[in-house]
Length: 113
Image 1 (spheres, rainbow, N blue to C red):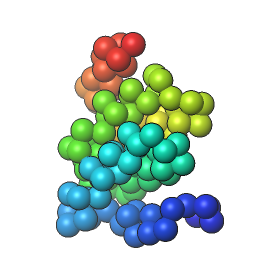
Image 2 (tube, one colour):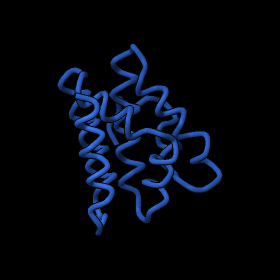
Image 3 (cartoon, rainbow, N blue to C red):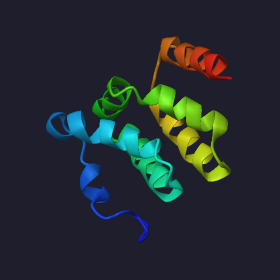
Image 4 (cartoon, one colour):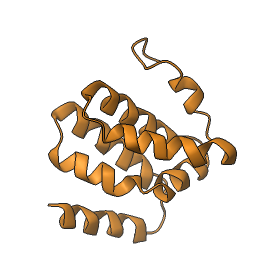
């Protein structure tokens, strides 16, 4: 893990039913911050939560309403912010065997543009 990661972010990476309920919405709020460094680290954490083993990370991110936030940042952020948002969205759709989730994301992308 990079040494510049905000303190405590490693602890946020442990996704279980007890912690995901509060952690992921907090990360979504941080991703919408005006502080670019906080935004970038929150997006990195959301992407990593989505990439955690099993469906619980993706479910927590979707349940927290992070997908529209990620889509908006993908559209209007600086390059490094767009990159992290794209990484998180890629992890949301990774391992999805049906096209429903991807179709919803595509529709959301069109709606945001």
